[in-house]
Length: 232
Image (cartoon, helix red, strand yellow):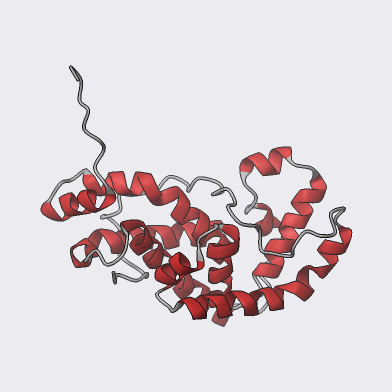
């Protein structure tokens, strides 16, 4: 083999090690690789674009500062998702304690539609999407997070358990309870759909990641950590 650089790009763990060692660019590459997927999870767990963006920012700042605590017991992406979900759950619990009415207002739910969906899909599908997200917002945060990871993002139950930091059985239980609570809320959607055999899941396996996260207003290491887990 002649000419050219045939070396493969560094893996996430190598980039994290470089960051800990002082490489000023390594963590930015990790963010570039994973931020959109973290954003998709945060958006569906929280149901609010601003809250989701803040949760992702908080999580990335936490990960930036806690990188030296990463011990490699899970993949870097699992570790990042765990920090992000923890940040989301913290915000969801605080919002639930303040909330006096449903967050599922049409204007806010419309923002959850990906730009290409909002512009291109039929109005009926957009309406179903809004109603589905409204129903999902009624679930407790822990059940919502489990359903988002398993049913909407397509994670295997075992991987979702690692992200959430709970047992596999707990994820299965949360999904089962969440689906049971979701069923009466979306039953009317099933009766309206032409395909009557479509399961009433929270979005289906292997769903697309959704809209990219808005550009950050600052670098990950320039904002104060407001929440999110920092444990590997």
